[in-house]
Length: 608
Ligand code: F6R
Image 1 (tube, rainbow, N blue to C red):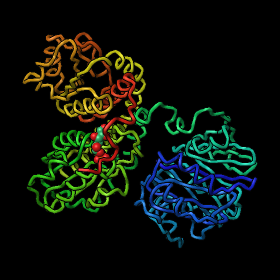
Image 2 (image 1 turned 120 degrees about the vertical axis):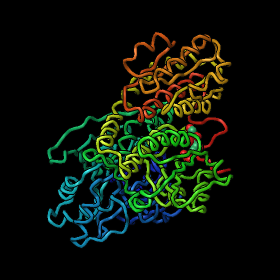
Image 3 (image 1 turned 90 degrees about the vertical axis):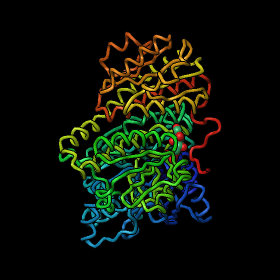
């Protein structure tokens, strides 16, 4: 997820000031590098966020129009050279882009053969060169842009400017949001309305396949096949902050709701369903070494550690490699025995958690191959590991991790297929997993559709002071996640336990004021879980069951039931964490707490 903003006006306003101010409200979309271009003053780019860019932009930098960008890196490190805007070879065409161009390598090879040379490792620069190439034959900016867009596969929201027609900016949307702002003698393009709202409330939301042209005096929209189209103008009365949250009250809820999109983004271009293969570009260089490893150690903290525990079950079952999962803060202080046949995998959303980073360094010192499953591109863990897989979940603003955990689980599934196929996992098994993965976005969407019922349930239980979450096998770690989410944003006592361990101690706590959240999907341990629920009911403990759709029997036993769709047992945690995240969110809200800003916690823990 990146933020783009473009402006063209005729009243002599300073476009650079408008663009830099606007970027601030888009900062939640990305903050690892930033840049601006105006035809009059050229471009300025920098690693870091808007404050860094403002420091770098000279006083005399101005212009009547321009484009600007905040990057959340996907292709290429967050360096100055990879920051947007990107230009073609001649420096006449400039582009800002949000999304991923899937066939960029193919296009780059073709253009390289035609003599184009590239400065950055981004997919975006390829698009600028492609428009340049078409400009040679089409001799028309709009036609060249359309022709180039017709060659592109993937997702994009773009703004494109040509020095030859400085008043005109072309926008296009395919999968990544674009909104136009319609002012008086000035027009805007942005990823969301927040930077536009200080100037005008009138906006037009583009749809996929739309290409728009703005000038100071108006706008036109056409489809990729050049047919013209009209889109409704909307009057927005949201505040800029409300817009950033997509109309949700909190980032946490918005990020939970992004689940289906996040799964698609983590999977994009990485699953070859026909042959049951996972294509993980970040692991290609170490694929041979990986085929020789005899043991895996996963190090992580908090929710990322919980993802690791689920990964352990997947990798051991489907790739047959022994896996241990450790809190990074423990691993780094003991004397672990590792060797060159050990892969140490660090899982981290931020890529900056100090304990996880130090565990990676410890692993390296002891000779292990180090890998990262990281969301923040170019972060320290991503840089210091030997190889890795990026999650592509987009920036996570809310302190409590939600969508990042889902992306970590999807990335771990891809890794399981990758390692499994190196070790004799059958094509059929891999295809089954691939197919089930592809169905997940719709299934998560379906769960999100029942958020009102989960909200009611949270209200019903909001006066409780203690909770226990139980699960078995793949959903044993899910019990930890349910408890962690509730603790960290509601400040109540909650514990995650293996359902089979209840009778070894915790069941003594159960009474009518101590509810149990039982994660009880229809899987290979269903009957065992049901027995545990019976034991709790016999002690008058209230039970909320998280069960599989169609399981009517469970409703006779539990006090309340949340249903989720059926999927493969190994993938069930990806569905089951969603209602637990929603439950924790609504529970905290019901108690009048701000889920985005839990007390005593920071988003990125860079202390020991
Ligand atoms: C839980 C949460 C934390 C993080 C942990 C690791 O909701 O947000 O437990 O999961 O601090 O952070 P990363 O993944 O950035 O290393």
